Length: 132
Length: 165
Image 1: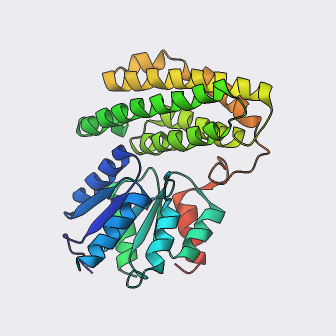
Image 2: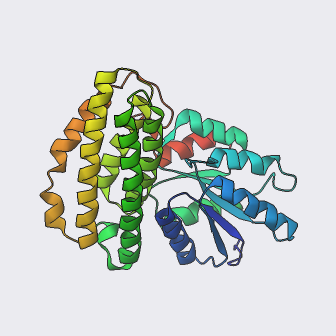
Image 3: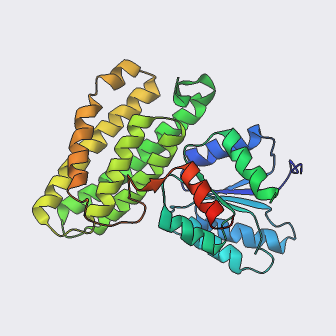
């Protein structure tokens, strides 16, 4: 299934360099409608606002480890929200311990990607999530 | 050639250096606060969280020496935040200050595009010191600090498959 290039994407990471790298990769694989947030706590109002506008995000990529609201807590909030139960949510992490992966899967994560990753690997993950 | 040496990554590398330098100032503040009051070990938790950010970005641009330093700094920061041994904490603060100093020099070399300068920093010897210190905390369990127990992408994919995803 071909994905819409203007799919509404939210990239959440507390390191601006990482957001730029991820945004670059998403652009490389053809996506054009990308918004950034620097923490789960700043991402959440954006997600709520987008729902209110009737233009919800269609895909979230979030770092796990962030100071105010972690990627896991953001994922839980998303999954508790009516209409977002199935929103594709890709968790990004520099290190993944088995227990954490299981917790995230139970919380409803769509997939995991480990830093460092290439645009190609990111594309494969996205294809996997959307072609399930 | 590593990603950070590629011309198309130049802008991202400059941003990474600038952002890292800002975060080093925060790391230094946390170490100074701890030095003033060695019982205030929450400063080490904050240190671990900030250096983790630099680690993730360093890995992504394949700055592996910087990433290794940050990874060890993160483990030491998080784990040592759980100890109350003041003489050991004095050593932790001293070594982390030195590590921070070396990280600043590594970032400066990267910004200047000077590989020789990076080689002259003799980071391997200091990595040995960081490993030695990290081993002092090997019995402390801490999620996201399992340096040898972390999964790679293939293991995660296999695990997710076994969990039905």
